[in-house]
Length: 467
Image 1 (cartoon, rainbow, N blue to C red):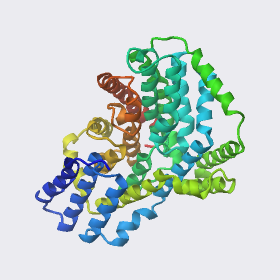
Image 2: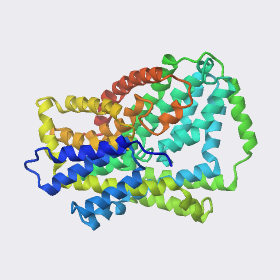
Image 3: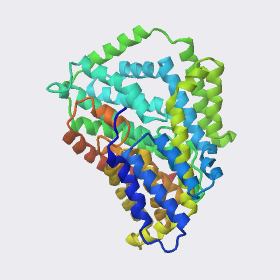
Image 4: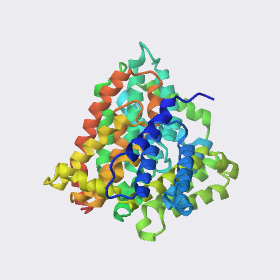
């Protein structure tokens, strides 16, 4: 077992102690203790002295023993429908890996449209887009499904880390990563922080964000970003090779090796389409997104695409259940204690008198670049979304618009660094780009995201009457 550096433990403990001894007029000792625990958990999610699930077990136990909340409250997060939606989606993603349908989809797209470096980049992003609605972990999607394919494609061109990195690998790796962030922002179920945003918005303003609402809201700015971002990477990180027929041949070869669709692949594809249609038509039939997910999961079990052991072996699902459920509970207690409201009242004065759209844009700017301090999208959302959301509403921003603005940038903020989200260390670790180049391109693309999502997003949301 690897020894954990002491500072990873000392940082959360120090944060809790410092906050406890700060003046806290207007809050009871119990409420202030809750703030200390919440801040320590957020810090722990950043420093990672232990896995997130283990951290949440300790935090929930400590909060109960200290009388900060009851045992019933401590367990309340595990009855949350959003938490179980994430669990179901993780189990779905296992089906894509087990049957190799995700791999087949990616190879098909590369084979059909990957005839030039730029088209090859778009094909990788398109493959990501197709799988995203059913893959709640961008790490599993970009790191587990698409990264091995992208790496093999780069190597097929003789592009390896070092002198040949710029032949093709650097461009493909950066396109994979940056494109995945856009895709992650486009669907409620495309990455773990998105349902957390929806839950915090429900707790903070009583608004519900359905799968369809999020998808429609992100569709136009997301589509524009999916066109612009790969091209921007192509200009900022141009490949030396201009012909990619080799990649198409490689993809075709892999497809021949895989053979025709298996029975399980066909069954998974049918279930996937059923679930997608039910999600898209949710406002018509009234079945919740979580119920739809479990209809799909039940069908996968009935058709034997997955068996019970597959579900038990999907550690990511049960890990997400523990830490995500605990986090939802803590956030709810934090909101009930009135901290978000107090922060909103204090921070609103910084942009007082501004039109709400300018104030919201300024808050989004701060929210985005604060991610330099985070190594996890979930930690960022947990630490900053409730307070920034409350401030935006206090300044007059429509709650749904504010939630969506911070929601999409809860994925896009990872554009800047090589540690901002799960796929980052995987893709960066391939060795095709230096840290300096990764950060430089990432910062430029963060400006591109701001230029696309803020003006176009606000305009689109106005046209579809979200405000």
